[in-house]
Amino acid sequence: MLEHLSIKHFRLFEDFFLDGLRQVNLFTGKNNSGKTVLLEAIRIWASQGDTTVINHILLQRGEWVPGWGESYEALFHRDNLSSHLSETDFSLSINEFSIVRHTSENWKPYCESLWNGKRITPNLDASLPADFPRDGAVFLSLGADSQFPLFQLWNKIVLTPEEDEVLEIIRETILPEIVRIDINQTRTLVRVSHEAKPLPLQNFGEGVLRMMLLAVALVSAKGKILLIDEVEAGLHHTTMEMFWKKIFDYAQKHNVQVFATTHSHDAVKAFTYALENTENTTSGTFIRLQKSRKNKSVETVKYSLDDLELSLESNLEPR
Image 1 (cartoon, rainbow, N blue to C red):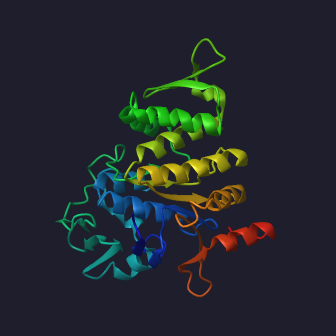
Image 2: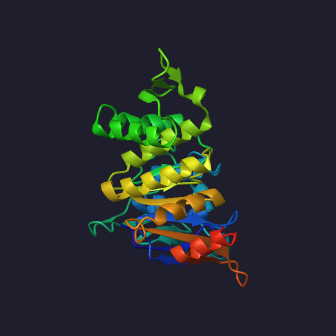
Image 3: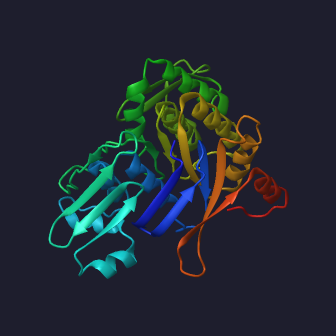
């Protein structure tokens, strides 16, 4: 598992350190407090700085111009970038991965694998595609087209025991009558017990679509990191309670480390209920990100289970 995270000069993180990470980690905070950036940093680290992953991150943010190396400047902390443009070089780093720019040369990433200690030095290449990232983690963003990642993940588990696990998660969280799923690149069909013919997934609403993607991602992340941006999107709070139970169960069963973000009080409440289970108490953590009033750096506030329970009982706002 990733036990700590060190980020320097990456987007709004000028010098950020976080330790005490656990198997299931939930982050909250106001807009522009760094929640999505944190997931992006972990995603880059998990891919060992793969260029296609970096390109895809820029594409999702609308910062990508194919073939234009200057697109990578969007990754840097703005103050750091501005103060070093006239100097020899400058860099950002995420744990043992770094991207270095030499003023007279192209962008060059350097990454030392934390798994085997082998140093690799790929070149950032703005001509490589941004649509097909070679991820080392399973990443679910908010607002992106969901059919492509759903098909890509499903294609690897169809007709395996993992397919049965996906059906189990969906039955126990949101759609008890589901019998089978058929997914391809353009559409998803669902068979339910009370219908003679399969129906398009869209017929069941946004919540079922989101849970389908979450379930497939969770089952697909065996032995990997699972990153979920705005985990509550499209889900009712009663569904969230059961889904957090499934997240903890599958994370422990399949050695998955989960990093999720939320804006939702109901999602925090459901997470707290799951954390109260004796088996989960030491495997989950809740952290709020916030801007420092002194220098606008990103600070972390960690909540114990007692802190969370007290906040919820007192109707305080842990977000």
